[in-house]
Length: 229
Length: 409
Image (cartoon, chains in turn red, brown):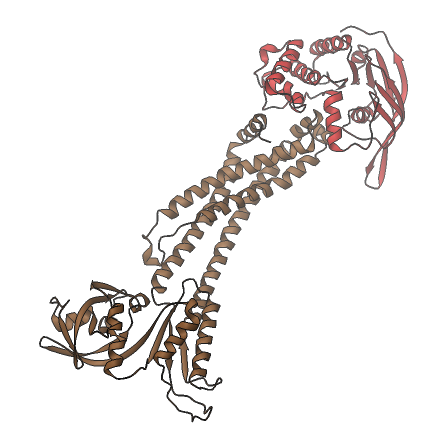
């Protein structure tokens, strides 16, 4: 699913350049559930952003589902994101003036799917996360856990090949975190490939593989016994 | 482009900032209002001027002979040039296509008697077209006819004041009046459109009649009304050509300033045209200025709106919105706001301007109005305005990097 070879990324900060990723090699196959861990500044978010085509790498190889990702135009990147990727963010990133159903159907809108078809599909995914009753509510009427479930439904709605989660439980209490993790585990059980950035060990243990980054390099890469949430 | 979802998105975005949208929309309304009202008033002023100064006769040229001031072709200087019927025919033959009306004028100051009263009046011999060339209207009867001229009839058209002086407003139409040594039938009574007493003390008779009486084919002066819509330069050219041709016919030196004089209104015309040109520029500067203020204002809220929606735009991009989709979202919003409020401004202003009619005629503003073409132009300007107002913010929005936007807490 993912093939990364010798990936480098540096940011220019005035005259100095900050070398964030210093030659990363990673392979992720279909159905995997990978936690990317590391202290802040280890480059884990940058790594996830590059995989998510929200940012670009400098040198090295990045292949997603057999497609070489490099020098993408904005338009192409947008289309790839839409087709390949689902995002789950720590701060949910729901659009506040759109109701839950509209939020979930938004990626389908960018796939040029008709309105009625969109709502129908969005409803299916809302059902999947157990929020059909909240379809016509605005995001600020929901609790944090509910918001994150809406965000998950939205990420799933585009039927992506890869789900990218950036600290999905970072803003949630431990009970809600478990609920959300249970949902994500179930989605993985259904065969979806998931990459998740986290700094919490407990959460990382719920994945199937832990990749630890330090100073822009992979420290360790272990397959683990998954803890069920 | 016109899918319903886009409109719902725009509507939601406008709805989330109603007050701000309305306030800056009103600047566009105001701009268009000012523009249309100024434009309409400018037109009204032009109409007013035209009504006041460009009456019948305003474009007339007057041709007359004077004494020469140079000796030429064997003639001494100081010779009096006298125009003749032939000259009038020559003008008509050679410049007929540039002339609407032409008439010779034969002025005589004659004693006029009616009843027991008598007084001296200017009696002018003219042809049947003359009524169209000067600013008078017939109160009763008719003007001279072709038969009057061909038959050299003793028909007279008498000014209103002549009637007042001589007949104390008794019915005079169809009666006979003694002019000079002949008796003339009064076939018409006229008044001046500008209430000019001097004009109303004139009497018009067939020029042929006067020429016969005085045994002459002289035409002391010739009045020419150029065709409608003639340009100032074409008028000047016609007047120069007439002068040069008549000079050579009468063997006057081409360099002689005297001999044949042609007076035309091209100078007055170009002054008035310059005035309206300046007026138009003023209208466009003020109207254009307020329009630019409106564009800047809409552009401003769109920039704010984009800044405020940075995160939302980032989310959209992460979910697969292409830059084009973002640009068209912002542009359509700007164009929509501009169009809605602009059209409100246009409608209100048009309503106002069209209802003024003659209520401001004391201020030289008469029947102001805006033509359909300038309304269409205003709408096109509006569309461009919306486009401009939306373009920069939209481009800014399209350049937002989703990663920066999502980091923006």
